[in-house]
Length: 306
Image 1 (cartoon, rainbow, N blue to C red):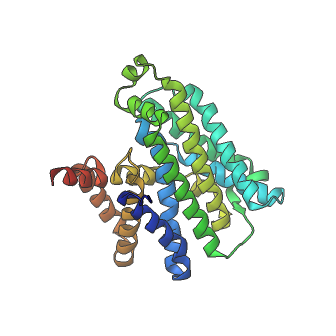
Image 2 (cartoon, helix red, strand yellow):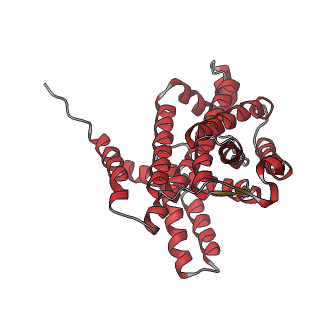
């Protein structure tokens, strides 16, 4: 007897199919806009793997995005390496550095961890500025130009699928349950037998690896890297806002938060070029105050009350 797919699987399957065929029906501005949304979903999702599931707020997450971007750029420009191996080396380096940085910083808690990671991101920016013979420093680094925008669409779309798959594993696996226990009460989780330090460190490495992949794609897509832009702390702030706006520690949170904020910004920018950031800020503050668990939390509450 044949079994049909559960109803809950049809929505993601349909969305994946629509995402896969979308470039054949759109082009130009809309293709680029959706690619940007995918990038922000991936970045917010990578931050969510650590912050959402362990409760450790990482204000330096942009460092791993920048490491992936600059490693990809340097390997392609200086060594003539093809994009794919350069991107994966950049992502692996980002993950390794997260593990090394995480050994001392994961013993910190709360604001101390956040400040330590912010300092790390600023240090990486200074490294990119000082080693101008390799990174181009203040003059920036120009990458080979590739104008196949469908390629970058599918690369960012693949990054979104990767983050969705990883987040789904976090929610279903024993490892992910351990992370959630850390978020709720770290001391109690440790007493219950969870190796809290190892779990946090692994989650940190995975989140950095994904951010590094997206950084590599971004570098090849933009074709130009500048330390002040690539390691800009405001990128981390946007990730945090998107994750919490949608609902941190959930599968759909970064997807909804990034899509909502990116769409609102684009609409407001077209109408209010000089004041749109103020309006966006007020909207974010309103949503956070009214919906502390994010948009996903609101939807879940409504579903339970019906």
